[in-house]
Length: 220
Ligand SMILES: Cc1cc2nc3c(=O)[nH]c(=O)nc-3n(C[C@H](O)[C@H](O)[C@H](O)COP(=O)(O)OP(=O)(O)OC[C@H]3O[C@@H](n4cnc5c(N)ncnc54)[C@H](O)[C@@H]3O)c2cc1C
Image 1: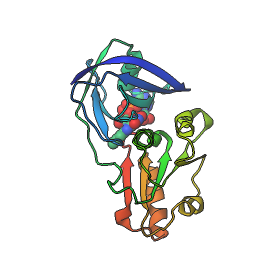
Image 2: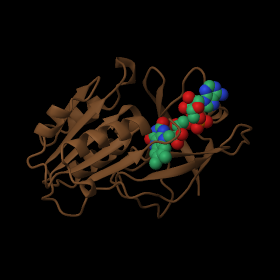
Image 3: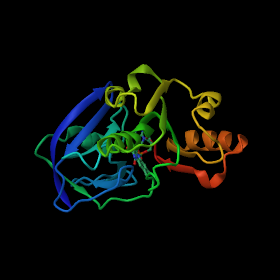
Image 4: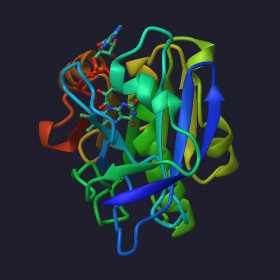
């Protein structure tokens, strides 16, 4: 589906949110992602398409995806960095099942590494909009202060959901946020290395494998 860029927000040093018009009938669940294709051809593999989480919440009027455009970048990110409001991109239908369970009584602990905070922006904003009485704690970790994003959004949600920011996640703190290790669901999003390390730590802490849900940002 073709869609138009409505605006581009500069969130921090190298991180930008691209605001897109929501195509008619485009419905998604908080936590899903989509493939964004650019019109121009890209020489480097994997071509002119990348997957991006929809950092917007379904209840918001526009679609947003958020990414880093570093100084040394791929052809795709170079083109993305040249886009301006009014330009068009192609968006696929929403994909993925990194979504909250329907049952509001299941406690949720979310762990994000770097750009992995994008699905949690969508999930928490949507849960707050729907006034969901869920026990959610979010631990977001960032390599450096210049990578920190969305803190204003998470703080703006008030005390309903717990939110902690760290340079490195401490598993002892994470486990303390789970009211009961046997029943809490753990949601992990970020680069593959982050997912592998934290999944192994949860496994060591005897968290049942079926309660660990992951969204690995392959390519980061
Ligand atoms: C389910 C899912 C959800 C995702 N959600 C997000 C999201 O919300 N936000 C987000 O930012 N990403 C997300 N990603 C990752 C995203 O799809 C891209 O892979 C990522 O942003 C890197 O794209 P790239 O074009 O910079 O690098 P790629 O071309 O894919 O290359 C991978 C890495 O190689 C290096 N590289 C490539 N070309 C060059 C070059 N010319 N010079 C120097 N270095 C180079 C870069 O370090 C780059 O990170 C998601 C991935 C998945 C699978």
